[in-house]
Image (cartoon, rainbow, N blue to C red):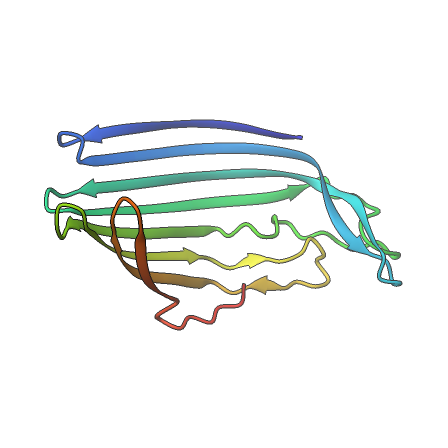
Length: 181
């Protein structure tokens, strides 16, 4: 069971050109299940623990008259695993880590879009994207104690479009980030 408590606000400012969104949240998660593997390789599902998640997230965006819009977002989260199942994992029981796997403490992103008409029927769009994801645990199993790397994913694209067709050229990961996900 997952219960979420959240409070937030959304604002439009400067004649609607600026948008601001923020939220704070508190989640409780009980009887979290995870897949484990027997020594034979057979998978099974088991209850591992309960958890709580506290966080804050925000986003700000701005649109200029000349066709440029920029959005910036971020998330801070703190997780805590509670009431671990004493029988978690294979025999002997495996200790459970104290944070939720797959949940980084920090993440964020940036999106910039420039759009302008080339002719009455043809539109040009240039897009740049960047996403940062902080390191996170990869398993509930404390004996593994592995963490994923932090990483930055970027993408740039250019598109020429009409109402009937689109031609897009893009480059994914132009900064050649090789973070272990």
